[in-house]
Length: 388
Ligand code: PLP
Image (cartoon, rainbow, N blue to C red; front, top):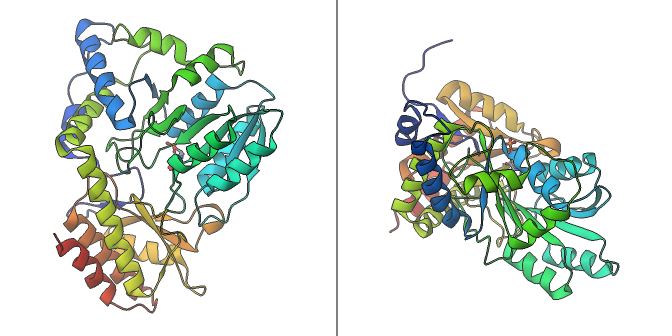
């Protein structure tokens, strides 16, 4: 290992940079997870978690990754042989529907081109055609991390309501929660799936489900096998400030600190900061003469930007040069986008100069890789950052 001075730039779209305050909070001694001090921590934590999801209902916290929280959403609400509607927004939507099929559900997968979000019209069309009401849930990835496209969940809810179809709405907010405006209750979402390692500014290791009344009711009759992911014993133990098994105590310390930071900045301010950094990034991409992968300006992601390379250029070569020369990690193209795009993460603990440094590194990397770009791209981004 060579020693590299200065901070590594972790500009993948999660895990994100963990603030020093959060790291310090996590370094406190682990306490008895069955003692009174722990109960006080949990009670306060669960209360301050709700506004981040935009809910007044229960938020279930698992030691686990986002993939585990996907599974929890499915196994708590559905039964073997149920039909579920997934929408192909990209790599993560594809993985989630594969999991659903693996669990014994029948999946309708609405095809997509990986440049658009979930179409409210297409969802409504499928539901309207389901006169026997066999579709039990609609599953949507809010912010598709593989493409930098944000689906319009409120519009999807409206389109579902217009069909009067009773399907549950399950939404993956793994790369949007705490970065992009999101409202579990107001948008009528039944299960919101989240993870710790992106907008919440923590290391990987916690998964979340925010749960509506309707989803809780569904969980009482859902028959998919579940044990570790079962909401009921967790919600029950949470009432007393505990968990049914050993929780990730030190990650919970970090979560409490991260929530304090989000609260101190203010969620609307956090979202506006992400919107502004995303706009500056798109300015840079266009200024360079390259293309943003997201093809609909209503669906630009505020937490990451995927950059489409010219046909004759390899995105992974650019990422390798940037890592070796400038010690910065960028996101790779996933699935069918491998080598075609790279992804700039601009979410979490992030400010104007972190973005300026990130974009300067990307610009130099593109030039070193021999990609023909206009170096005015960086200035175009700085223009956004300089503006009030
Ligand atoms: N869904 C989305 C949108 C993601 O971005 C990710 C991971 O990046 C996942 C699901 C899977 O989460 P995890 O890797 O924490 O299991």
